[in-house]
Image (cartoon, rainbow, N blue to C red; front, side, top):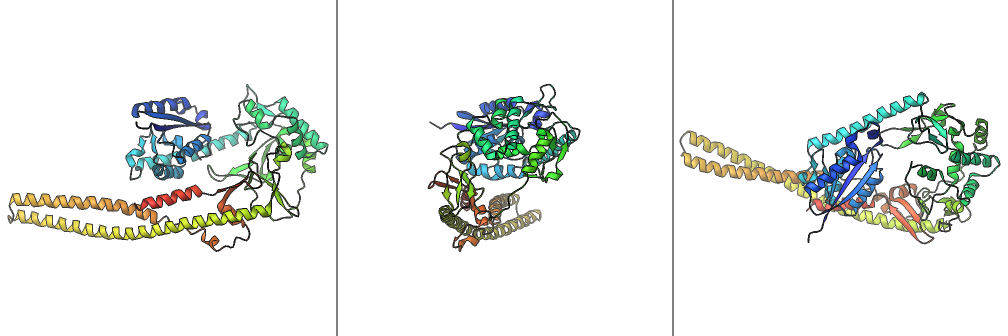
Length: 525
């Protein structure tokens, strides 16, 4: 019996769609449309649902689409249905990459119902100009609406209207006036206690320890109770940390001021950059204060000094992750320096990393780096061999195209000559028709052959032009005596420490490189 086809329907609704009340884009209507389409066009299938409610299509940082693409990587899907291309993504480049490379390579059929796009119709080729233009317009729409929304929000904030999607811990939007902040007394009591303990000389680290010992709920847990967030803890449970306490102590919102314009983004879906504090914009006395302004300023002055950096930054800082709580490990520079999980001393969890010797860790990571570089050099070597074979094949096909074109030209010249002979009565009508039919059949064969050759030439030119610099050749002759920052950033994505000897290294783009190698190998078939 034939196995059931696995069909995934993906639905997305952004905050902009909600604000403009586009009913046709609602999750309910998308689900009805896609389920109806699947029932009408497919038999014997299983249906999986993936959705992102309130997420922009400008990037792929969405839980639903991440889960969907994970299924694609594992080969667990046969077909993906979306309402239109903009529901999947509004990024022109990324959408084209998935439609023309990733999904065909994975054997996934992709259908955008309202756009009339079905990848089944473009096997062995690329989508038409209308699809490319639609993706481009989706990308432009996203950038255009982003600029307009930002301008509208900034105009509101300049007038003192609170226009943020969420509220700072300790506040919530008034039920009858959504642009007005009111105090949440249960949360405000925690904030006042934090400031009071700080005035008493208790460090942020100690405050976090005490709050965890007393099982005081964290800001994210309060937010989840109100239905404003849905998250799972990285470790066993949510926990207070010293950084959370510090962030609260630095937040001028608690003095009654509305602070905005703290971040800027150079491009849509790009990375937000924190601007210098002097460039932040402040609307003073915007709402009711939780903390007296004098107390807030006094604490800022007392906490304003920073310790001078004495040591060079270790290249693995930021990549070391605790296998239990998933927090970044910190470094302790003693006579025998080591990495440790700071969360262990805040949450008192015995499963978090206590310490791992840096010398042992560096030797282990260097050994793994060397193995990974050798693997990647082998993969590049194979790709080079394949590219050389493709270049030879390309040269042969170009020569064949010249020969076929010359043969076609000779046949067309012969066809003209027999027509002249027929006109001047040197050939009978029956002989002319028979010879013409034979010539036209041969000309058709030439044209078909040219189409096949052109198609192959297009593939070979594209693949031969994909050559990248040998980014690992500089590491090939390395003695791997120490870990360089460039080496760590280029190869290692994260290093997860489960125990002193259980170390897991996640490599940058390792899966992508293997997929590219497979594509190269498939290109010569």
